[in-house]
Amino acid sequence: MTVPSFDADRIDRDTCAALDAADPLTPFRERFTLPEGVIYLDGNSLGALPRDTAAEVQRVIAEEWGSGLIRSWNDAGWFDKPRAVGDMIAPLIGAARGEVVIGDTTSASLFQATVAAARLRPDRRVIVSERGNFPTDLYVLESVQTLLGGDSPLERRLISDDGPSLDDVLGDDVAVVVLTHVDYRTGRMYDMADVTRRVHEAGAVMVWDLCHSAGAVPVDLNGADADFAVGCTYKYLNGGPGAPSFLWAAERHHEDARPALTGWNGHARPFDFTVEYTPAPGITRFRVGTPQVLAISALEASLRVWAEVDMAQVREKSLRLTELFMALVDERLARWGIAVVTPRDPARRGSQVSLRFADGYAVMQALIDRGVIGDFRAPDLMRFGFTPLYVSHVDVWDAVAALEDILHTEVWREARFARRAAVT
Ligand SMILES: *Cc1c(COP(=O)(O)O)cnc(C)c1O
Image (cartoon, rainbow, N blue to C red; front, top):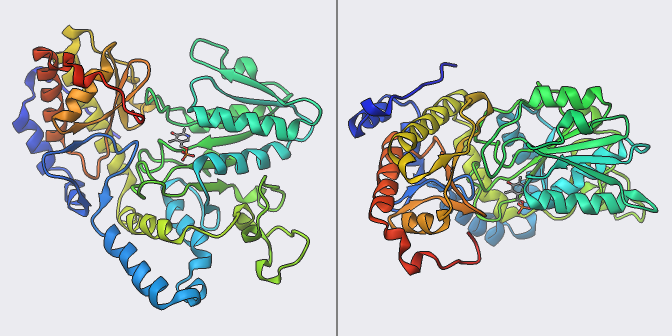
């Protein structure tokens, strides 16, 4: 893949419009409903609404629920949805059919997968993760440590950019390594195949969190020989607020895996209503209870769009958008002390760019007030997600122009932009 580079001196809004005209993904923008006057750079937190989602959910409510009633568990395939929709996610993450299942929340699925992973190494007592990981991942690991520790919790070792490194903490006592492929704060991306190989060399099991990867960058779980993975569907996959997570387990682990939560939907014969639990074969044993049919139908509508998308084109455009944004920020915003914290090396970058600025919270509120929506992560990061299906090069140009104006006029100093809401 050729990675573009931009000379910000020589680029203007017309150049951006020309890039949009030549862009093979431009037609996908019409598949989304976006409000007039909004530039949406927060699809890494909550993806935009696909145009067909409302009609599909309405159809499921009216026909499958309203008319079909309980018959729809069979007739509309409700009971098999977690696997059928998992198969729609599989090509986006380098998984095979029958390896992905829709789960509960990402937090719950991570618990489910990590317990199964740790149980594959019963005589090892260390779980490795990262200090900068998304907090819920670390909180969930605390439960895994307690659950599996016996008399005392399993040990947790956290790596970080300032040390210790992965190689510092790996050893023959490590059972599982849980890492987030693309960092939610900085957008830094791991080399999945390389990290997985090092983890396997130490004899440990690899669990990947793909929350900021699925639909953002090409992922090849089987190519990397990974063991387990989980991820969100409401971020880049546009499944809607609260859309359920997905869980992947490499086929080689299906028969030995013992997930944490053994619910009736993961039973080999759920409608035998037996007293004893017998795990279902394959990925189905990771299911827990009744699937969230309405939420899954919204996700399914979005995945029909994804089925038409070439991830190589998404990656190419994502790198173009992030390169363009960084070049314009360097050129036009550096004088206010705004710094790009996202890796410049395209191989180490996901599909977002984060900018460090002490008053980033107020600046972001002022920007949102202008219709340019990004978000803020404490203590000082402004995050901008670039979702190539509905963000254009002109959007990037206009967003940087708005940011420049806000900094120049210092409108962000107004008191109303300092107030903090519950969700940032
Ligand atoms: C968004 C995100 C989550 C969210 O977890 P939920 O249980 O869906 O709220 C978890 N982990 C990471 C790395 C995330 O980016």
